[in-house]
Length: 172
Image (cartoon, rainbow, N blue to C red; front, side):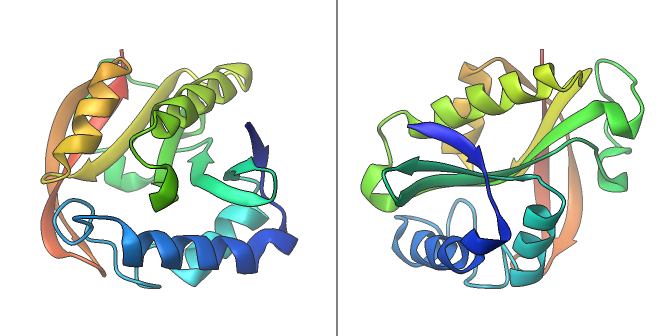
């Protein structure tokens, strides 16, 4: 399988993919608390595609995984004490990583994160970061296994969760 940058023609299939992941992923309401079309949003996915940040992992024509990898960080990342201080445009951030429920627990999420790390390095990024909901312990374990380090938490508001704690991670 190969990681490819999504095109606007992929939009409808990406929406269907995230709808399916949201509906069929075991314990979604516990760990990620995604809500169909509230997170990730239709507008957010379209924006990621248009800016060239949306990536798909496919087996033939089936989307097995999807994620956004931005080559900048937003202001919500400023409050965290990072191991290195770099400008926002030198930080890659992983967002909305999802795996097709039929392919979960097969190492595909880890493989996608490794590919995102390589992509960020190829683009000259000086730091790689991400966030996950505090109760999303399976994701935390995967990120730590891949070399990410917990750097702090923030109590933030999100449409799909309300006020909740987010844990922030940085690649060592």
